[in-house]
Image 1 (tube, rainbow over the protein chains, first blue to last red):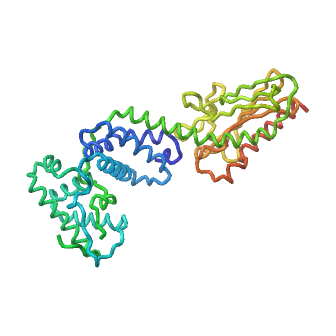
Image 2 (cartoon, chains in turn green, cyan):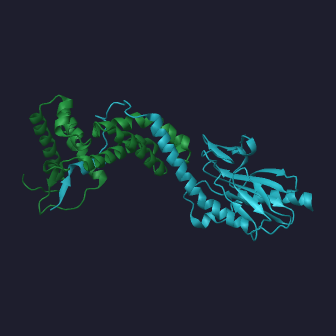
Image 3 (cartoon, one colour):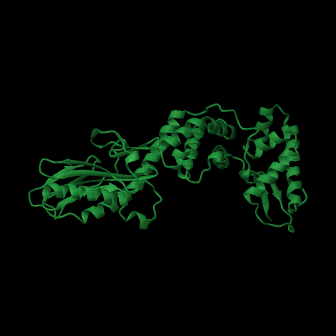
Length: 176
Length: 210
């Protein structure tokens, strides 16, 4: 990391040696069947790391790389998908009386984590696969060995839990 | 009516529990080549501006020389032509990298600075800093003094290559900073290591030319 922050390409090479498999695995999960995108996006993320090298904190590098890769993959997914993302069910509609303020990253991360911790492992994994990795419900269900309608109702449970916690944070939602 | 997009809400989340196993799905060497090629290209572009500033400063010191055109090829890849048909000297600058993107004057490797001009490979890290230069000189057959001044730290280093010639002429070019975020006001000033190195060169010149 020190070499990277100093602008020494050897530092970037070391980072690539360590994290290329990890980042490529994230790309493969979010964009299945598109190897042409995996390589391009992996390179993009390392270039982004190089450009932001002075801001990177050594203990948070892996997380930064993962989130950057995930976000780029989701953007690519949205550009590629025939269906419009997000679907109606992926949106929580605030009521007219609800505060309209945007959630700050830290608060959003905390609320999401709290919501996920209340779910059992299967529900939690389903939620993360759908909303973090952008998998379709069908694909997530198949990979987890779940029946599709079971997966949909479990996912709904995750959304309800999140709404409950957002409600405690002051947000109000329209009735479904 | 505002809506919360759950995909966007997850932008702040970081998954550690369900992250995929580290199986490599790409050609690692290809990724590395692509990235490093772009990094070298960006570094080259970033340095060109600095070379221009140093060259402009050097050009101000040039004077005409009436012995016919002389072209001095520098190790950096740049050159200076003096006494040609053009009015005044001309020069071509270099960013200190050869056609393969390899350093020609100073190389930063694993946190150490190496002087690599003239077929040499000298670790100068402990010999230089912001105020102290490493100076290489060579007398030419025509009485000129070819010199290279290197200084700085692994975090921010630079070099200057020039030639002193009889008749108070000469010229050179270089790059005073490797950092890309230098404020404009800082990089138009000559660094202390350069001024110290130039003093040594001038002293050596005076000692032979009175």
